Length: 324
View 1 (cartoon, rainbow, N blue to C red):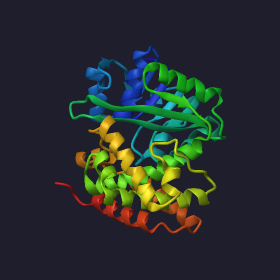
View 2 (cartoon, rainbow, N blue to C red):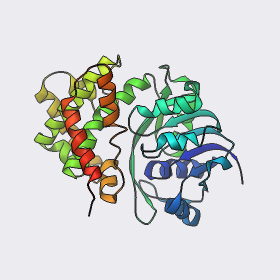
View 3 (cartoon, helix red, strand yellow):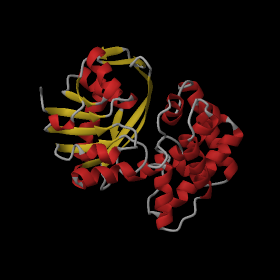
View 4 (cartoon, rainbow, N blue to C red):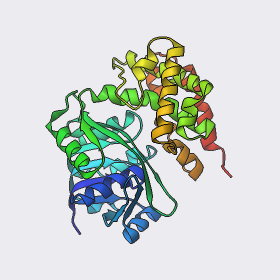
């Protein structure tokens, strides 16, 4: 078995599978790090993509990370729970670049601890999919994966990786100011997670509803206060117009969210947040590593986030209570 790959992808859920399948189809050497039922599905039937693309391809799959020696690019695509433990098993891996498309900024801290900050690329994905029960992956949204150096520039390394992803069929761009983009997405994602779990609706519906749009605005504005206190600028160039939502009147911010809802209704009417997919599948929710992370950061600099805290407790309770 090959022990040196161009791409090693940790996690074979929806986004990991979409990336691995497209890169392998483009001729790159790819290995998926997966376990249990999912690993067996891939070994038996390959990575199977449906929706925006229709194809299946065989890809090397390992469950024991010690079998690998090096990878030019490591992509972390697991859910956030257990990431530190998973990366601990990969510390021996020689990598040129490591990036994570997970939710929340904690991912970069964990990658830097495992491989050194000089090897870490910032990344965020405005790309979506859903792992179906039969092992296929429904590819629902292909807008952009943004990559950049943590120092702030696009850089040749980020440009090269983004170029390979884009040429393979998953839209990607190297960008400046990746920390601003990641935190702006995180501010939006906190609201999206909270509303997806509490409404259990497809995304466009709670973005279009005036009451849930108002709650989302207030959650994003709390996150905006934290982000600015950390010295990070907000931008509209992420998954939602976060800078606009955090500026101007509350009514204008709600109208901006409702416009996004109408756009999603038109372009991705079946889109469901990964948090809702996890809830309905009985998987753990990414609550402590995301909303919990935001609250820990806020506590360190004495920034109150009362609405974020309230939703954190509600979603944590939903996560703990057994689901029928």
